[in-house]
Structures are given as C-alpha cells and as structure tokens.
Length: 465
Image (cartoon, rainbow, N blue to C red):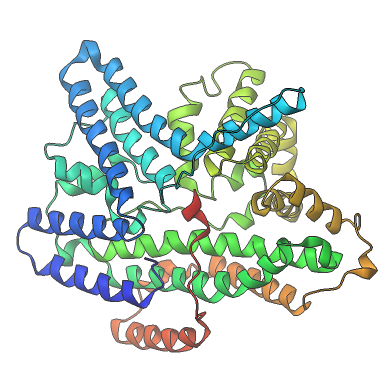
C-alpha cells in the first residue's frame, strides 16, 4: 500500500480520526500499532512474522542488558546475531551463494547451485537498524528499556516510516511514546500538510513521470543514442532524489499529523560542495547511524590519518552492501569510500577554499556517474551504459531509438525549483502563512497537481532495500 494511492488516503483518514477521538493514550498507541501491522501486512502477511520476531528478540535483549549488567554484552550479541542474521539470510543468501559459485566455476570447478526462492521483506534494512539502535543504546546506558512490549512494537512498526525511512532511533522515538499526545500541543498542522504535499509532488509528479523514460533506456542502452543515455542518467539522478526524499517527506508529514516527530532525512544534497558534505545532506539518518554505531566504535578519527581513512572506507563499503545484494552496489560503496578517503586531507581543504561552483560541479558530475552503478541491473548492463555514454559499443549513428531532449529541460527545471526552495525556505515559511490563505494555497496546489498524477502507481525505489 503506497502513500500516493487513494485507498491509503482513506485508511489514513480513518487512522487519524480514530486516533484523536480516543481519550486514553494507551488506546491510541494500540490503535496505531494495529494500523501499522495492517499496512505492513498488506504487502505480504508473512512479513509480519519476521518483524514480530525482531521485536521479540530486542524486547528480551533490552530487558536482559538492563537488568543483568555482567551479561549485557551477551544480550547485545543476541540482538546483533538475531537481527543481522535475519537480514543477512533474507537479503544476502542468494547473492553470496551465486558469487561463490561463479568464483569456483572461474577456478575450474564444477558447481551445482542450491539457491532458494527467497522473498525480500519490504523495509527489512530499515527496521533492522531501528531495532538494533534500541538494544545498542540500552547497552551503552543511553536508554532505559521500554516498560511495555506494545510500545517497543509500535516503535519498530510505526507505519509512516516503516518501509523506507527515515531511520528513527529508539532514543528519538521511545520518549515520545511515554508522553501523552495532545493535538494542540504536538501537531503543527500547516507544516505537516505542507511537507506531505511537497513529498507527494516529488513522487507522483516528478519521479513517476520520469520512470517510464528511464526504464526504457536503462533496459537496453545499446538501442539508444549517446545523448539519450546521458539524458536518462540525468533523469534518474532527479528521480531517485524525488522518490526517496518524497517518501521521507510524506512519512514526516504523516507522523506529524499524529503528533510524532521524525528526523529530517534530506537537506538539499545537490548543493553540497564535497562528498563529505553530500553525505551529511543525503539520507542523513543512515549516515549518522553508521557514524555512531560503526565508525566511532571502529575508532573514528582518533587514530592516524590512514586509520581514519580506512574507517571511512569501511562504512561506505558496508553502506554499499546495505543498499543491495549486488556487485553494482558494492562498487557503488567502494566508489564513495574512495571519494571520502580522497577528501580526507589536502583536497578537502582545497575544496573549502575553491569557489562554491567548483565543488558543486565535482559532486554532481561524480554522483551522476555513480548513479549508473546504482540503477544498472548488473555489471554487464552497467558496462553497456558507460559504453553508450562515451560512444563505445554499438554504432551511435545506428541506434534505433532515442528520447526527446525536452526531458533534459524537465530535469533542469527540477534543479531550478530545487534552488528556489533552497533559497526561499518554503517549508519553514509554511507555518507562518495565515490559516485561511494556507487553506486556499493548499487547495489550489492539489488542484494543479492531481491532473499530473500517473494512472499507475510505481513502488518507491527504496522499498527493495
């Protein structure tokens, strides 16, 4: 069930009305938990067994780590092995089996594949990191274990951000569950509606409109001209941002209407002047999660420069694997790890002194190339895409298909709008608009947007992670 579907609007209206109609806070939370399980189970009821198992593991691990100080490390290991074991099996089993088989064949051995038809549970990469934050922070003494199992279950399954983030940590969300929610005190209606609306526009009006063109080119790059491949890559650059940040915006807006605050996940990343700064703006909740739970435990920047570079490289390598079980994602992580290593030193100092446009061009050009890795189905397809981008492979003049250059103007128009929103602080100003004027602008906005909504609903790109 997607946020952009009409049936979801009806479901959320029901959830919202019943939630605020209930008098007792415990009843409200149980209602939200039931809705959350229903939304998640609508993808496949079997997913509920997995998310419930993860919740049970961390419930007992958290209680054990808090009550038995001498054994708290053992309880932390229970959480790590249980959660990462499930993530590893469902997400990476076939990848490692297939890769190992290919290696043995390359070495000359005869191999029979034994892979399973494993369905990747929606959102498992996101809620696994959320549940781990609960046990890890209890282990570190930063969080007390939840007094109610249902509160922990709601934290894990909270439907607005369950399947594609933001990645919310227990220390950010659990305290909100212990404070009684008040509509007047905890809900900023205008800001919540505005951020949901802009997220909807990003997804339905931009991402979904670009999707058919991108799929057409990336499915067979050899059948398209060099210019068409470049345009499709630029469109995907826009699509992946609008799709992912659009989901995050809608999640934040929906949670806000229910009285809960989720962390911001994007901060205009395309205006970054270095990749170090880019990853402080793009999928920020993943970046800070890796910094706090992987980078700093590895030693962070406390050691030598080379050790710091190694630590940075490792978190980007792991991040690449987190994005997907494919060699394209591994290389994607390696590429950004090398950018981070390269920038750790004199180059970063030079970038900070250089004109802003230099860093802007450097980041966006390099990001455009790594997005080819991100989007390609496999390494062969990626090689074909790069070949077409630079005129190799099939004869460009003989390419049978091409896409209109007007799509490049559409992508550029997005960057213009992106820049205006960045400079004008549109979301921040929405709360200051008089309610009557806001209602008129909100209605006009929907009237202009709805005709552009695609007839078919396209799943969010990050659902597969």
